Image (tube, helix red, strand yellow):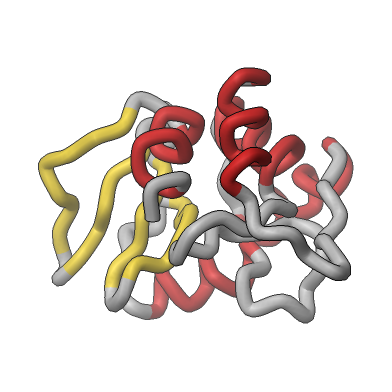
Length: 133
């Protein structure tokens, strides 16, 4: 994970005011808001890399409710757009969402269905998709 964070940091776009990283208490509050546990690898991503901006995709954030990427807001919107409620959005992609299941795997949900491609966890997705976007 640390190696992947370093790679993401190398590709990150410098921000004048970067978002804060969440701590465990912030994530517990979000879990209570969305009524789902956040898988371990997703929590790790949120606590270590969710303040970085990299490429064209904008993964969710967890500390500033005013941001359009705030996880509870993105989750409510995704569910309203038909994303199954056992999935947690990671990143909006056009009309679809990269999402995380309770096993921590990432898939693209688009046009009302899950795509066939699966990434083992959020870190693999970040390295193979996000950094290259």
